[in-house]
Length: 437
Picture 1 (tube, rainbow, N blue to C red):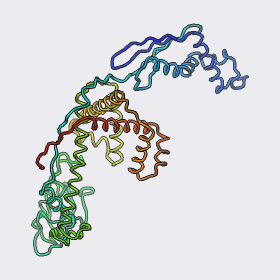
Picture 2: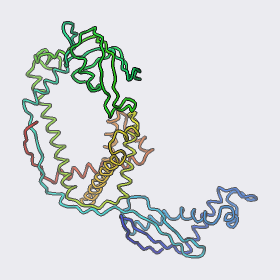
Picture 3: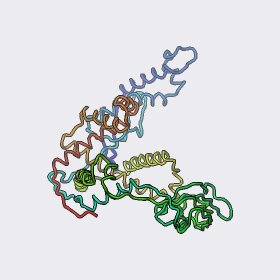
């Protein structure tokens, strides 16, 4: 077998393979026998029809294709191994010249991994911002706890204020016609935190329980319902109940409600402890990200458009699936974006390029440092998935056995984890204290 390689653009390698006539003939004859096993030929049992009869029935070209399908996977695998080709996609035949009694010529296209030029990735020093836990942060957390234990109190001796919660009946009209889905009864609306049409909540202040009145609003130009965009509307309102949120005092009684605390001091100490734990967790994550970012910035790689296309299409499919799971229509998303699909795809392609570079750099460092995954690493990933989905590890393994792509993804995640751990161990982090906002 004779093999020559030609480097083409975008990391494609053109592989010219010449297979001796005898091997090609053997592959052809084997293909005839395989085809004869599943075709019906009058006067012959399956598998017993002579070659000439099979050729007349299915045609020589079909037999040649069968011969190539039977022999080329092994041939291509041998070429890849002998020439140390770092293949990233399934190679494919672009052309062939298959004549009986002559050497078989086959041209195969192979896409190889782009060359990554690593910059410095060890003995670096990165600076990471660290915000200390302040009294203001502790007090803000205590204030949230107070609000979490607030109670609603019905008000009967005054008009509604913009901090109240009101219970209303409402019905909306545009040009005198009722708005579909624009009515409700006994609806609680927080006037201080409303996502209703602009101007709606504001017109409900200064009203008393039992009042019936009308308000006028204008639907925004970017409203999700095309039939209502920019339209003037009238809403009939009945004010049923006015309630105010009563926030409890920060005292020992509240502390005992909020947790296993005897008094405010114990609760405050617990809040401080949890904020410190969050701070330490954030420091580790930020340090990991900053080290990795610097390593990535120091590396260079030319990513072929074909790789970006594949990754972008995969990301787009995932995005559409997530939207569908949330009941969101893709066409509606396109309409809501000023630049439409062009801007969405631009963002997705940028994300795809970043992901590809990250993955290529990680794989290159793993190769340089001899970092390999073990069965224990994969087992740990199974355990993480089982814990995340709250199922047994056996169920996870059974599910993955039906989808090899998931196993490949888990393997890549395991490599990522080990490389990032290596980078954290071999680089220095300096924390810079900054004031909390």
